[in-house]
Length: 451
Image (cartoon, rainbow, N blue to C red):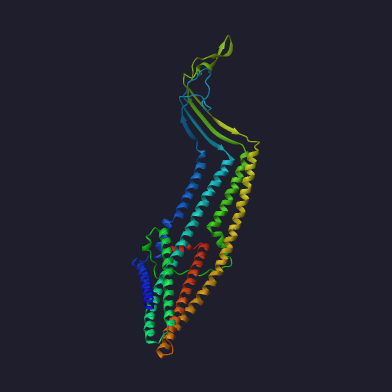
């Protein structure tokens, strides 16, 4: 019964090893290529780019409002009696209308605000690019960790298989007890659990990278030296303030506050006079009774007196060109809209201040976290080094007959645990350094290797 259980455990380990080795069939993909594919394929960047185009189109729509807008059409209809208007204009066979603002202070401020909104969208797009790069690099580093861990666990699984076989032989010889066999079985089961965990986590990360880059999940494998060397942390007491000023997120918040201020300014200037250019041409018909009610006349002299005489010539072509002038002086609703815009501007200003303070504090926290994590990595490396030396010492004691297989298994288990700890701490350090690079504005250059 015990032999069957041991064989089953060994079979599971071998099956896990075969599954983990399938990723080795793929060719390693360098980090730079992963980042480039993520930037070209990520949905978040496409969404932010579309938002940027939308804001640019809104700005152009407002700005081009100063170009006269031409419309043409006709107002055909039959008239009985006096020729009434159709939708506010006289019935006409053909008409052309032109209109554009000449002086409109509220519109001018709205255009300036829309231009700032386009700049905000561009800054958000830049911030989204940094977020995608950080996500891609972090996922790449995590996948590299799981791949290396699987290689290490495969070696441990082979050692556990040999240990189980040796303990089974020693059990038959009466050297080991049932407890020793159970401990060997437990050691192999723990390794199988670790393999299952690593395989599942690697599959999830690989699938995430697949969605991010557009590559097939089974074609993604990391290089041995996954990440380039991180730059040293700048020893600059003003780094948090400089990072906050250079942050695209902070800049976007500041520009948004300026846009809201301009919108509030435009709402107040809606009370200023405005001038619009307007022109209209209409070709009137003769079946709408215009010739009976709009009788043209011309000056003439009758008995030495200047009077208006009937012309009897109906003018079908008519045109009007002029300026429409408006002087708003009383509008409680507009005053309420202006007060609401003032509140929005104040809110946006305070939000920009809060965003800047948050970015500055986060940069300072990351600075200290990097130093702390570097110290933690050093401790983990030393502990792993000691654990490996302990494995060598146990092997030496086994040669001298003062240690047995179980002592070696315990030493290897401790070394494996320290290796896992070292990997986890190293990944945490890399993620912290990535966040600091993004905060200081050097992430894209570092990831793509551009000067």
